[in-house]
Amino acid sequence: MNKFVKYIKNVAIGLYRLCQGMRITMLNLMRPKITEQYPENRGKKVYFNNFRGLLTMPHNENNRHKCTACGICMMNCPNGTIRVVSATMVDETTGKSKKVLDRYLYDLGSCTFCALCTSTCPHGAICWSNEFEHAVFTKNKLEKQLNREGSTLDSAK
Image (tube, rainbow, N blue to C red; front, side, top):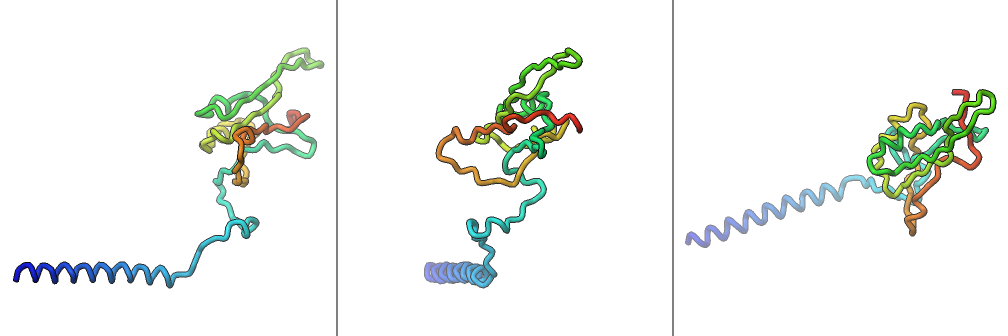
């Protein structure tokens, strides 16, 4: 008789657990759907203020940037994602040599999006954009040059 009571008790517990699961399933079935249709609503996407999509170097209408090639962003990058290649140029008016930006290289494939580069840049020369679609077939396409060809330092800060 003891085995029979134990069996009935286990069946009752099983039915109770099944009803609990069905109740949760029905509640989720009745809730409004919040699925976003990604490719169709691409333009309606709202981003947060601290969203980090792609590192960019803003240029003004005269193709000038704010980067002085100091290399602080490169030194603070934890995994060597950023490479600042600078050249030495002699100023004709003063005769002094100064460092100018030649190429600003960024490897998106190894970036951890930690924002140490943007937070430590003394001139605010680099910032994050909202672009987030980075799917490519070859790894070489993830290496980008952020400064444009022929761009120069914006001396009016």
